[in-house]
Image (cartoon, helix red, strand yellow):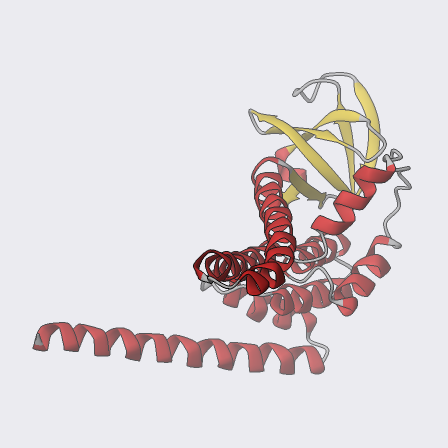
Length: 251
């Protein structure tokens, strides 16, 4: 028992020391940014990531530090990662849009059907974790309503509970569907940001194959396949080609 308590105390002490280190690094990174030493700020923010810590604001600050150094690809990459964790945060959306406006490529997005646009907008209202918490909350409330409906003997009370239980059941199923779809999307639909200033897409995963099109730093692409250091990518306008793996970083 004493040994278990000692191990627990060591774990708590280690966690407190790690939290103190992270707090010190954040303070140092923020100060470096305020001093306009953006390279140092980036290094300190990045060291926090290396410790296994991540948050929307950490990626946001990294994006800002990179943008100040004219690292457009890295800035957009970190803003996109921040947006995945906090999709409704206006400052993240604003800085991402501002950085994307600096991107050289003008790719026309293929039009989507109305119901596809609506579904995409709805599913992206919150992050995956938030949708998961909403689903759990709805599941609990729905279960309590149905339990009350089943257990009560009064007909008038059953009538009052029936429609709320029915509506909450629908909302729970909708939220569950969105959560599952978002998880499947994140697992299967991989996206990446071009980090090289200029890169030429090839017809096959070979540097000697035919050139297809040229794209630039900061462009977001969809990853289709990967083989031998190459990624097959798809652009928003439907164009498909192969890019060197080293020219990209996944979001």
